[in-house]
Length: 539
Image 1 (tube, rainbow, N blue to C red):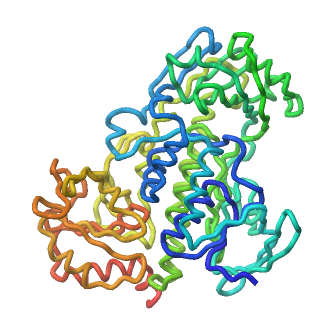
Image 2 (image 1 turned 135 degrees about the vertical axis):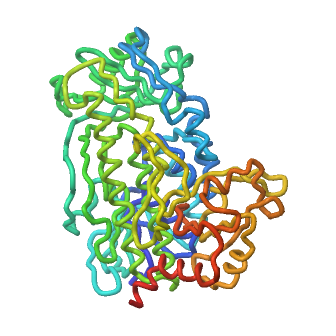
Image 3 (image 1 turned 120 degrees about the vertical axis):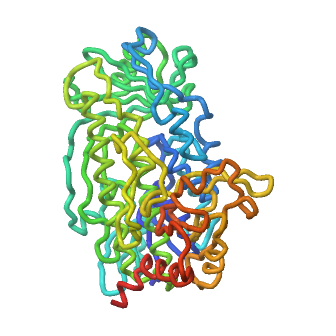
């Protein structure tokens, strides 16, 4: 009988990230994946800047960027009649504007999923104490008081291994067996439109080198499709939109037809090698419950969304970034299990917002009708507010009575703020001769950031014994370890020189004191007790 604190079912980017994050928190886990290895096809490609911040905190961002397309290889979005013919329009995505890029110390990255997964797997396997088993499937499970029991099956030998786990994270993708077994309700619209993904090899450099783009949309009366950049040279994806509207069924897509359609979209008789064909249907649905007892849904198991905007993989990785520190705090005895309810409260409403906007992107581009020359709504690839502007509301966030930043469009606009629930703002600091971001201070720990006259807050943090996650404190000022050379930190965080901000391991603000407290130790201890659910549990 296997006895493990956390079982992770599913070895895609979300499950692998959960394994790595749990290991960073010192929590033993077992990841099982029914396939023999990581992904063989590109699937998702775009990693947004918020997810790259997560990878930066995990110490894998450089390796991910090295595995992906070189920086500068995808600066545009292009619409054409054919790749070799008339160009209809080109755009620079709003996410790439100087103002938006100044909100973070990192840049987004294009790294195809079959290149990304081996990177995360390598780091997860070396991190420990988490372990990974491929060719192994969760075949049955049940819940009882204080945990989950079930059976794992080796897909090569058929050998069955019973297990017991305190918690189960289901990151199995859109066809999640765990989700179906739990009987959760899915909210939204299923099977909104159909598509076909074709992976192929061909030399397209002469038509793309002068206008490097992540996406090349092809708009014709009898063919609407997109060339998806993978390596920018000879490896590409080709996405056909709404094939049924043009009379094609999934079984029609033989290698011969696929090659013919690719050449039609290029507009030249080129050599094409078809590597794979994947018909699929887009849904926009979200689970009504992200937590059922001791089981948590994450990634596509919790939400299926159209790929227009590239939010699926990113939302999933950020799901487990939110969840894992809470599981670690409970398992290591610092928090009450009530804290785990905040995972649903924080991520499920955001999942609905992102899914609705992904669908709105798709509909604006005419995915459900036979038409051509359809340009997307202005929000497409300009969703800065969705990427950075989430403000959580739960028992793990202590409101300070301030109003949210006023924005005209919460989808496209992001205003940095340390209002509790928000992502802590990025501010460049100096430590010795090194330039660092406030984002670099966060990770598997709680971080108290105090103003330039915040000595009392540092003493308060030192007086509080926190078993896990640990609590570290920094003072930001001219004579401190961390210097604010541009004098931006106090304004960005909305605190006076004697104020402080408490940031959770996922980089979101848990609590803020604009100025000094009469008893900072008691104020900080009370805030932590409430965040960890200890006050509610006692009550």
